[in-house]
Image (cartoon, rainbow, N blue to C red; front, top):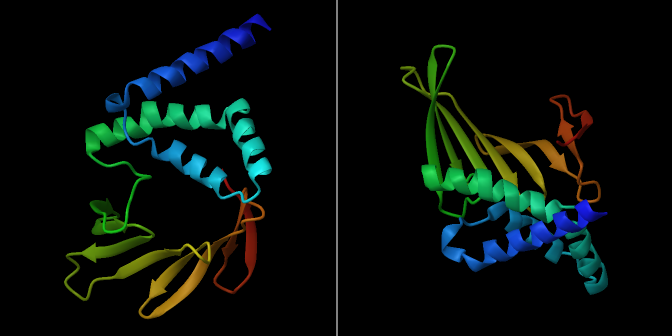
Length: 173
């Protein structure tokens, strides 16, 4: 019981320090996303209960620790946070795979892959996320083919749509 009290006190002091030094931390994107998700709960009593549970279960604490020691550090050294892409933000990366070079362009809700230097017309592939569908699609020309669909009622699962139209339920990490 003494250990639990010390742990709670330590977490509270850590939270106070984090809030007291706003210029010393990054954007805390993960924590903000978790907090905003909680804000989507329409019933105020349920939202408040979930908010308290997210502190007790240490979801907020873990997200803050990941933000402080991993994501904000990445943001400091690379100039961008992988969870913080806004509309209009674009990142490009070159990748060598099996003797071929590809360019990957990441934008909000979209990844474009293009083979570079093949001589012939370059192979292109795009993955597009449509938020109101809560699904990822593969773009082929003007057509979109759904490949992954998230179920808001069961957030721990996603449906993978196989090429023949079959659906397979997978557990998310």
